Image (cartoon, rainbow, N blue to C red; front, top):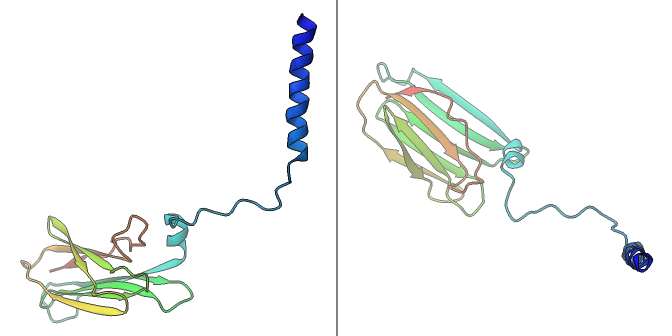
Length: 158
């Protein structure tokens, strides 16, 4: 009886192995999942540019911008806060059918989110904040979890 069980198990193993040998061999690695952009890969194809300057005529104010530029193209998203008059401008020159956004932190509040008008546009906002507050901004390609965003590194002053 024991011999019969061992023989049956060995035969089953051979049938399984034989089926695997007869199966067509894979000729290429499986295609990558393109249903959602991998954030690290997407971010790697972008360069970030930031700047801060105090010479815009606003005593004590520091203006800033943050920009994400898609490498090898003329595509970019950008946000700029101008201390004099507290103006915010959002540029969306990344054709992804989604509005670029700029997140703005002023003092201890924020982020306030400002949307571009759509692909290929520039939108301006006239804001009002108390003078002398720390300002940060971040420009993003959209509100998607896979959006590319600038690092929120430059510090301005309202």
